[in-house]
Length: 252
Length: 257
Ligand SMILES: Nc1ncnc2c1ncn2[C@@H]1O[C@H](COP(=O)(O)OP(=O)(O)OP(=O)(O)O)[C@@H](O)[C@H]1O
Ligand SMILES: [Mg+2]
Image (cartoon, rainbow over all chains, first blue to last red; front, side, top):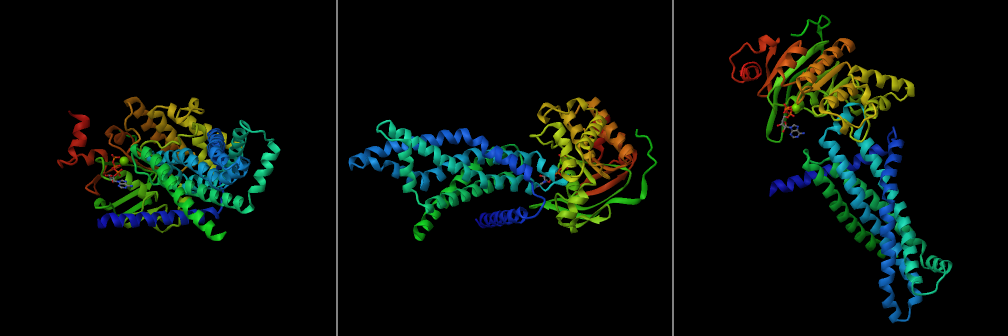
């Protein structure tokens, strides 16, 4: 029992040091610009197909399911306002973060832990490259930057899905749809969306890198790391969402 | 038997390990290790699996920290160096890993140029290409330059791993079981490569092995790690001139059976 508690504390200390080191390495040269760009490509660009599909479906289905309840009150014309608020405030950041946890998290976890198991990280270190900077910092920067970009994209494509769902029943021009959308979104909503997705992006990068970097040696460590990268980052993303919602409620 | 090498300078000690202890959790692995590597020699380290041979060279290159004791490499005390100084010292140490540790996501060419590109940022493209081609030719694998590590055999990977460490022209080489799991012909090639590196690059090397033929072919001096300490030291014949039942089986297995 005691031992478990001690191990937990040691783990926390290690996580803390891992985070502190990130900010220390972030601001000291040399900067791994090339590697960061490559990671942005790997993490962001390669997620586009999957994320396009999910974003579209979420927007489309959400609109379709909301319609009957609004019609009951004779408020079907409120649909654009409803979906734009739902998508910008909640769906886009959350859906993007969850999809990215699954896709990017498992990818980073597996990649780093297999490098760890096969001593590639040690090899990097002895050949005069700082593996923390080269592998971790570049990936975390990439997720922190690309998840917000993907979130905007998901919001756009989700709204488009919603629009298609609406015009399957009603007459509505694209122009008047988006006019209504922009009228109902406030600046604070956009700000909250960006803030959230930055937090989520950082979380996914950091958690997956941590899990991969400190994976247990041996090939079963790779599978475990990929798995726990996904589970842990999803879990933390939900907790953060909960906290952010509370804080936003207090602020406004 | 190895041909005599005359360039060894027994007054110049490039690696000096003094009374080093290392344990993992409850398990004591190294218990007071002393080791000297002299300039220009090939030192073979023998020992059973799990006695801490790989741990020892990781300590020397600063990948692990000793619990106590001192390690001096090329006149610098490894434990006292900060990250930047350690990084600089490591450029003079080549480390060939037990399982080669090639970067899976890069081609052979990218693997080889990685240490160069990252450490000597003022080299031109042509100079890098030339360095890559010359080390690759040295290990006899010029044709593999555009292949991925996953397409190579164990022996080829080993040689690429050695080539990757040679590209920075290190003063000290560490080979972790260079011939493990290879066929006799490839073993011979690797052993010749190790001797050729010693001659051509004037390196001092630590060679960890279970393979007595390798020990005999490349070793100028042999030490044996027994129960966390170096207890036997000397030439190949001297090491095995004993009735110690921790030592005999090494020899018997290889030559009698
Ligand atoms: N990072 C580590 N954490 C915990 N234990 C370790 C670590 N590295 C090595 N050990 C333990 O130290 C012992 C010695 O390991 P080492 O790899 O040095 O053995 P070795 O002599 O190289 O054996 P082999 O000939 O099989 O390669 C092993 O029992 C291993 O479990
Ligand atoms: Mg070993």
